Amino acid sequence: MTPEAWSRTIRNHWAGVEIRNHWTRDAILREDHTRSRNPTLVGALALLRSALLAVYARLRESQGGLPAILENLRANPHLTQRLITMPL
Image (cartoon, rainbow, N blue to C red):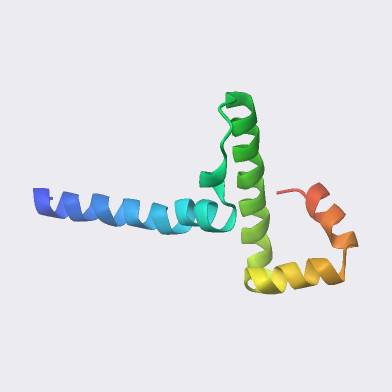
């Protein structure tokens, strides 16, 4: 590959990471608003956010976007327990 092609490939990769991962964590899960300096707490919150994103990805396939998922969970609170215990 030429240097320009490598540069384009790298930029495209990180743009996808930003859209798929970082933006979701920042805009939806408000990760940037975490003010704790405790590394254990910050790590635990990051793990919880990752778990939520995994659950969201699975539900998005069957139920659609986040508003539909949240509406379904509000209407059927018993489903939240199933989400917690469902295997990935």
